[in-house]
Image (cartoon, rainbow, N blue to C red):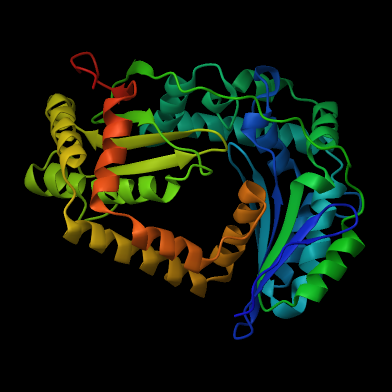
Length: 412
């Protein structure tokens, strides 16, 4: 496979292609280097709201036409907002690739933010917030990040508050687009049956109505930690035990990913085997690492009944103490194989390859090869994982969040 390259148009827009000649489809994504972390408290939620409004009408297409045109070619289009980026993406048959690029350019550059559509979508997002609040296994993650970072931007909800959603006006969206959506901070990527020259040509042809100003640098967020207990009449307690993690720019980024997998990344992981299989304390338990530009969060999620909560917490403590002392070569080798298999299996999907390509450019301004990742994983030793575990679990303040019948819980 030829080496993938990042091309920069004269307007600073970055373009890259991962060509797959053997497939009949292409996935195309527009990655915007802005998310809820770029918002202040007054406009928290606008990035996500704006993502919704992109599908609600442009100067040449109504909201209904947007839905009908894409489904008319058998294509798929969607978008999502995270803490640090907003992504609009499509998957189409290869003969519709240029149409997909034009379509994406239209919804990003020419949205009208019609007041009638705005009011309808305002109601949709308020329903989304209500749905999340009624889903303890969803809202616990918002509580967790809010507890870990407080009023800093990383502690804010991606959805925003109902109060903010109710007050956003058409002008708010126009101003945000002007400030945050610009050539320098956008990458357009394609994976599948698409040629590099074509994506370059189409991007230059259709993406010609964006701003040129670079967005403001992100404010540094500092991990704080703390405890949040939310009493609610539920059958289960949903809880997260968390620690100060690592940025995706940190030299130990892949080591912390491996640590999360050994501790709670699958059916053979320590937490799954001990908490679920041996003790029957939870149906769902896993470890994760959220990485951001300058910080990260390492967490352990579990759902259990109120009478088993403290027993589960104590068992997690035991597993944390054990992993700081010793890692078995066999389990590290197993996770390395699992990691490599997951990476290589994802190469069979145009969507996965498109997502990786765009994320690499937005996060690192370079494309990280599979070989580079696999080589780093292979070099990790048992001692390095135990040392990293000790650094994270022993030397940082804990974040503990729980929702349910929590009055008798003893926090981690």
